[in-house]
Amino acid sequence: MFAQSGGMFARHVLRSFVIPLLLYGAAGLVASYFVWHGVNGQRGLKTGVEYEQRIAELRAELGGLKAERAQWERKLALVRGDVVDADILDEEARLVLGRAHRNDIVILTPPASSTRR
Image (cartoon, rainbow, N blue to C red):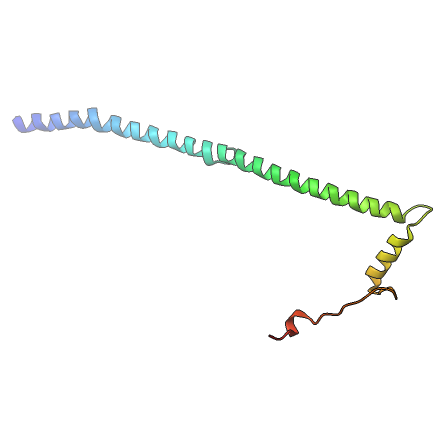
C-alpha cells in the first residue's frame, strides 16, 4: 500500500509543478515571439529607424538632384531662345566634337598604363 501512495504523491507533485511550468513556458515562448516581431519584424521598431535613415538619404539625394537640374536649366536657358550665348555654345560644341580652339593650349599626357618608373 505504501508503494501506491508514493506513486500517487509523485503524480500529484507532477501535476501541481510540471504542468504549470509547461504552461508558463509556452506562454513565455508565445510572448517572446510577439516581442521579437515587435522589435525586428516588418513593421517593428528597428524597421522604423531604418526607414527614417533611408528617407533622410533619399532627401539628401533629392536635394543634390534638384541642384543639378537647376544647373542644367541655367545652361539650357543660355542656349535656348532667340539669343544664344556664344561662349556656352562654343564650349559645348568643342566638348562634344573633341576639338580645341586655335588659341587654346593643349597639354598631352601619356596614358596612365604606359608610364614608366
